[in-house]
Length: 203
Image (cartoon, rainbow, N blue to C red):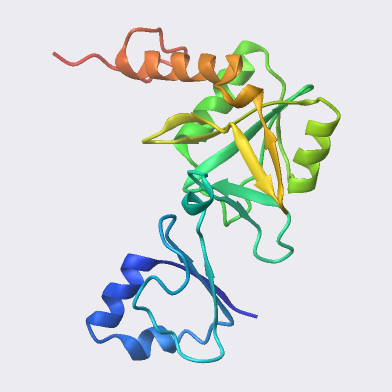
């Protein structure tokens, strides 16, 4: 089975420029069209018969991003939008391991280093959505956030899965998430010391 994920605008551009044969020659069983503001049928994209299209309509449902799961078992958390994903459980800060399909983000690495410096236990391990919801039910899910170059640290306040929504940290930015944001942006802007000496002042 072959799965292809593609941004709607990029796909539409390819089709309009006469690359239909290349697109349809992907021989995909599933094509995920990524566009938070659209739903199936709202774009002039025809992939022909026999190809199932999955549309990301998160924004239509009141959410700002999607939580990407693994393509094989569809249960292991990988990323949130284009960001790395972190969960602060009662006993540790956990993020999925770099398994080849997850971007090894610089901000991800920076957060892991900051957490260890702060004495926060960290784990890089596979996490299922069920793990997250079970931790929530046990009162062990404290915070959740994504990390990336542009977003730096972005809190996740709500999570919907299989018709059930949970609210994390009261729907607000958690204390640890805020601390990570403040520490990292402080280093970036030179208002906080850089423990690794990677920031060099320029005149």
